[in-house]
Amino acid sequence: MASSSLLSSLCIEMTLLIHSKPNTKHQRNRSIHIRTTPRRMDSSTGGCGFFGTAENQELCSQCYKRHLLKEATAHEEAITEVGGALTSLEIDESEPAASTLTPQQRSRCSVCKKRLGVLGFTCRCGAGFGGAHRHPEAHGCLFDFKEAEKIAIRKQNPLCKADKMIHRL
Image (cartoon, rainbow, N blue to C red; front, side, top):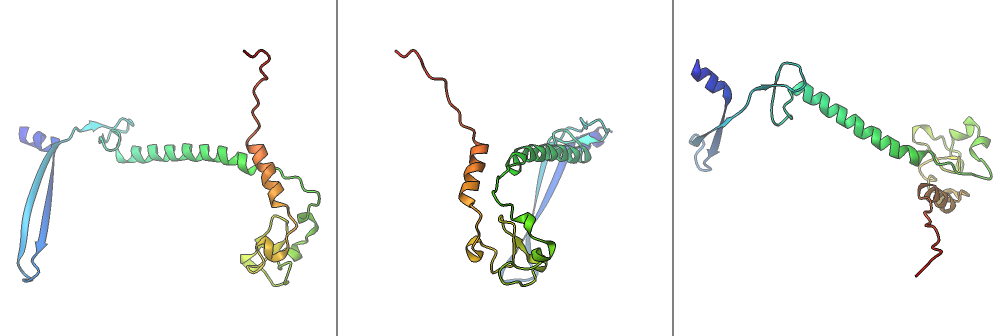
């Protein structure tokens, strides 16, 4: 009985290292390394009744997976909150070009009139283009990218001014 509890509290890892000699095919050096480390067998802190390990923060494998999933979703929610501020930018345009295009025009390149298919690119000016004309320089885009980015930066980074110092030394 004592030996079985001792064996259950010890983790015996055996590593068999096989080194083959380059000159002979059938001769091999074999060495066995035995390492014994005491391992506590406590029940999982997740409350499921299984045993937890120190590598898994005293949780069983299933509770640890659930713990990692909760951490990942919390991290993703924090990212979406920050990313939501970036996507909620409103850019005022004097001419909304996207509303003047019909669905027929969006399925063809606005420059060469080729069918776009799956690989169509929509520019910020609102028109659809193929691979050859997708860049603003290739289709003569009238959208003011510089001003749009200035507005976006102004909205993301509000100006912080300190109160004027009336009484200086």
